[in-house]
Image (cartoon, rainbow, N blue to C red; front, side, top):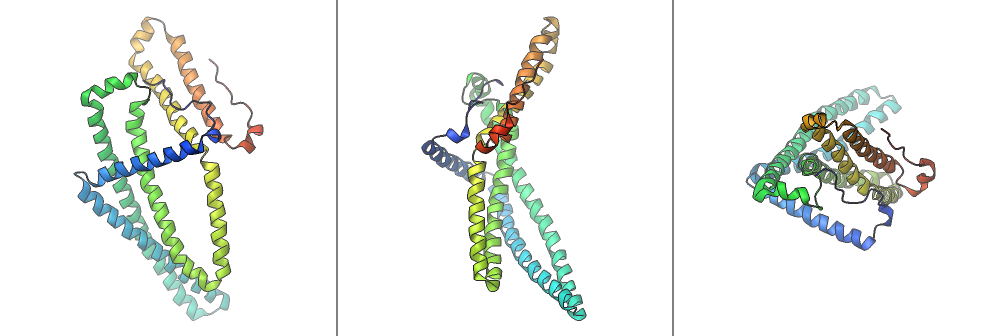
Length: 289
C-alpha cells in the first residue's frame, strides 16, 4: 500500500502539457466546489454557515481597522514632525485606541478561522472513514494504482485541504478588501502612485505564479515519499517478531534507506526546480546503508 507512486519522481513540471494543465485545473475547481458544497449542505451546515458569515464580517472589520490605523499613524507622525504637543497626545490616543480595537478583532478572527477549519476537517474525515470501510474499500485500495497511502490521504491531506483552502480564500478576500480600502487612500495622495503599485503587484503576482507552479508536482511527491517512508517504519514495528525470527533486519534496513533516499532526492529537487538554479544544484546525495 505504501510503495506505489502517481507522478514519477523524475517528472519535470516544466514539461507539462498546457492543455492538460488547464483541464486538470478545471477538474480541480469542480471537485473543490463539489466538496465545499457538500460540507455547507451537510448536517453541520447551520454551524458552518454561521461561522463562515462571522468570518466574512470579521474580515471586513479587519480591513476597516487597518484603514483606521493608517490614518491614526499618519496623524501621529505628522504631529511628531510638526512638534505639536497637543496634536501629539490627541493622535497618540487615537493610535493606541486603534491598536486596542485591532487586537481583539484579530484574535477572534483567527479563532473563528481555526474553528471553521476544524469543523470542516472533522466532517470530511468522518465522511471519508465511513466510505473507507464501506464495501471493503480499504481492502480494494491495496491493489489500486490510483490512490497510494490512504492513511496519509485521510490524515494529512484532509488537514491540509481544509486548513489551506480556507486560508487561501481568506487571503484572497483580505487582499480584495485591503485593495479596495487603500486604493481610495492612495488615490488622494497620487493617481500615478496607484497605477505604479498596480503594475508592480501584477508583475510580482505573474512572476510568483510562473515560478511557483513548478513546485506543485514536487510538493505532491514530497507528501507521497514521506508517507512511503513512514509506512515502512510502521511495517517494521508491526512485523517486528517476524523480522527478528527470519533475520530480515538487513533487508528492512535497506528498504528504509531507499525510501528515505527518495525523500532526500525530492526535497533537493524542490530547491532546484527553476531552470536557472539547476547548474549550481548538482546531483542530490544518495543515502547509503
